[in-house]
Image (tube, rainbow, N blue to C red; front, side, top):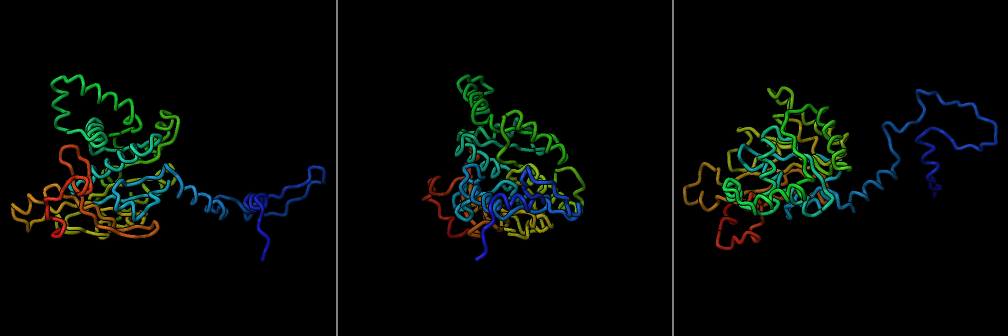
Length: 335
């Protein structure tokens, strides 16, 4: 059995230099500078093992908060990973993303997130996060603020100084280079780097979206951003009408524009109530149902799942049926 490399020998191979006795005569280097080993492209395997071990034991990994989905990828998302969140217009993509952010904020008091949202103003984003994170009725919150309800206003402001201070939202349309600068600004504000990023959504990112090649290029740039910024990235993508009928799953084909290959996981949300073949009574019965479907997963144990859940129309929280007390509904066997 060959001898194991010591830490010094590993470092020596990666730097292309050898430790020498300071009292011995200097050696003349025979390395060609063009071919000398470097660590620009390769890292020792031990670094990969240590990084993987840290990922599996870290409390800072990104969990979706949807328990059946997290059971399919219990390690969550690692830094540099990209999850593609797909769905048709008004299917609940942004709501699902905010549920993920709120879940991680609640589970880890040191977790921080940046949201790039050229689709919605930051005031609306923070109001949604407040409702989801604290389980508040969004309509009642708006009405109470309009009426000058100081108790509710104080609670909202307290949240903004507390849990919601660990979220920074940019509603400007930025280039990827500008977004990297924004990440540095966020780190300076917190005194620590972000632990997750949401981009809402792919088609609104700068650049031409006229064809699939351009959209695929944006996805590649987004993945590169995640690697450079060293954060888990949730990238929203609005799938076209041709991917699947409304209210039915598109599956992996919903992201088939070249960008799905960049993602570690692809998560789809769809609403059965949008199906065109439903009658009024059937539509009412599934009004609050939202499916969260893991259609690609490169994380162990590599399982997939299509999970019917409940969208609380008051707070925007996405909950499992048993949590939402859906015992009187019989949609599970039909949709």
